[in-house]
Every structure is written in structure tokens, then in C-alpha cells.
Amino acid sequence: MEINIGANVKRLRTEKNVTQEQLAEAMNVTCGAVSKWERGETYPDITLLQPLAYYFDVSLDELVGYDKEKVDQKIEELIAEFWRVYRQDWRAAKKLIEDAYRVYPNDYRVMFRYMWSRGVEDAEPDLDLALQYKDEFTRICDKIIGGCTDGGLRLGAWKMKAILLHAEGKTEEALQIHREKCGGWYNSCDQMHEQLFQKDRPEFLYWAKHNMYELAGFAADKLVKSYFFDPAVPYDELLQKTEGTADELFRLGCERGEAYLVVQAESIYGRLLNDLKYRPARGAKNTDMIRVLDKSLAASKKIDELAASDKPLFDVALGERDRDSILAGRLGWARSSAWDRDVELRKDPEYVKVLEKYEKK
Image 1 (cartoon, rainbow, N blue to C red):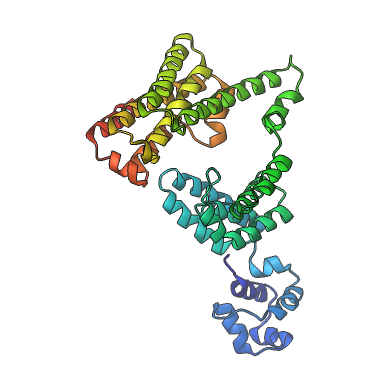
Image 2: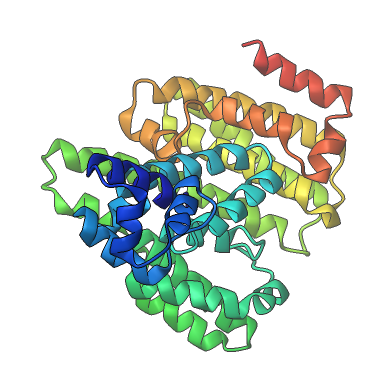
């Protein structure tokens, strides 16, 4: 955080029409000490801050140059930049938030994202890494849970606490945190939003459609995982069951103009492509990944088109994720991701050809 005590002392002294000698005498320090403060070479002793603030009739915040609104704005801008960079290069985003944590170590928003940027991951967490950061993360979680009023940050801190317990072998305690702090599907905030309104109200219809789109994509994501991570399902059968299902959903969704079917198809293509790229044990071929990429981008483009006239779909697919286009986001990641498999794929002319096809649309 930038400290402007020296500049503020000079400004306040000038406004009060006081000389350096007079201020030095009032604070029982040398004139040279005041001069060094004002040149920014040293800071006043901490015991002098309150007397200086009283002398100039200002708050401590004003004396040290702390402007809460400006700092909050700076942090919000920094977090927005973190997410922008993260979509392109997670390593650069990690460095950005680490630097921010050194400057704003007590801001809940910054410490939360710093903690989750260390690589433990919220899904399939690295338990060895969790143990490595256990003491530091415990302190951060306790600060957030004990003092933060943001429900999302508090819930994320509880989630990390559960991961830390699981890493220690206290899995039942971790699951108990989930039961107590998260509840079941029917206790989710979006379900409660829907139930808040009478069924003849437009707000009810909005939330019913919103939840339909979100759950459609969510269920489709689980479909891929149920096949992909089942070792009894051979590779070719895996593709047929997932990609084939998505093909039919996309065809039918486009034919009928049913957005929820396209959402399911896009979710299947996206999850399948992600797992084919980043789970090398399945032995995915470039030709398969390129084909699925093509279909994923086509489905993303279709959702962008449908979301333009469907507010619930827009909010689920775009608005809540702070992006203007699913297609643009997918293309941006494919072009700039620093993951090894993405770098390797960008060397394949056929992969690049697919990207160029949708970049021109």
C-alpha cells in the first residue's frame, strides 16, 4: 500500500501556515527529522502518528494517505485483471495475485484468491500440496471465516478447510463441513431464488429457466465424467457414448431451436475436450481432439446466438461469468493457454485451421 505521510505532513503544515521548526518543536523532534519526513526519506515514529493527526485536526487515515474507496477500487480492478489474465495464462495470473497479496495482505478478496491460486485446486485437490501450505492456508481461512461478511468467500474458505482436513486423513470431518455449510441440491441459492416467487410471476419463470440451463450443463458435464473415468469403458466406446450423444443433442437443439439441448451438447464437448487434452492416460489422438474442438466451437457459437434473445441463458452462459462471448473465450484460451498440451496442439496445422475457421466468422 502506498504511504504518503511525508507529502501529507508537508501539505498540512503549509495549509496550517506552520514552519518545519514549529512542527518539530510541537512534536519534540529535530527540524532535520521533519525535513526527512517531507522528502520521503523516513517516516515519523509510530508513536507520533496520533499526535500529528491531532495537531493537524485530521484522521489517521487522512494523515497516512489511506483512502478506503480508492483502495477498494484498486483492488476490484486488480481482481478483474487477475481473471482476465487467468483466462490466457494462469502462471502470469498467479504471479499477479502473489504480488497483490504482498501489498494487500489483509484484504479478504486478495487473500482468498491468493490461497486458491497456489495450485491445490478445488476439484481433485493436490493433497500433498495442501499439507505443504496447511499452516498458511489455515490462518487465511480462519481470518476469512472470522471476519469476512461475503458469503461466497466464507464458503470457499470452509471448502479449503475441508480439503486440509481430508489431506490430514480426517475425511469424515471434511464431509461434515460440506453437510453443514453447503447443504443438498435443493438448498442451493438458485433453487431458493426460484421458490421465492409465485409461479405466475415473471421472476419465477426467469429463475426456472436459469436453473434449467445451469443444471442441463451440469448434468452433461457429469455424463462425460461417468464414462471418462471408468476404466472399464474403452477409449472408442467412451467417444461414441459422449461425443455421439452430444452430436444428437446439438442436431436436435438446432433443429427445434431448444437452447437447453445446445447447452448440454456444448457442455459435453467442452468437458470431453478438456479431459482428452489434460488426461494423457487415456491416450487421446490429435485427430479426436481437433474434431471435438470443431464441434465445441460450433456449439459455443450457437449459444452466443441464442443468448442474445434469452436473458436467463445469457446470464448463465455469459453474464455471470463476466464475458461477452463463449466462442471468443474458447478461442482465446486455445490460442494463448500455456499448458503443455495446448502448446503442442498449436503446432498441428489442422488444429490451427479449425481456430481460424471460427475466428473468421
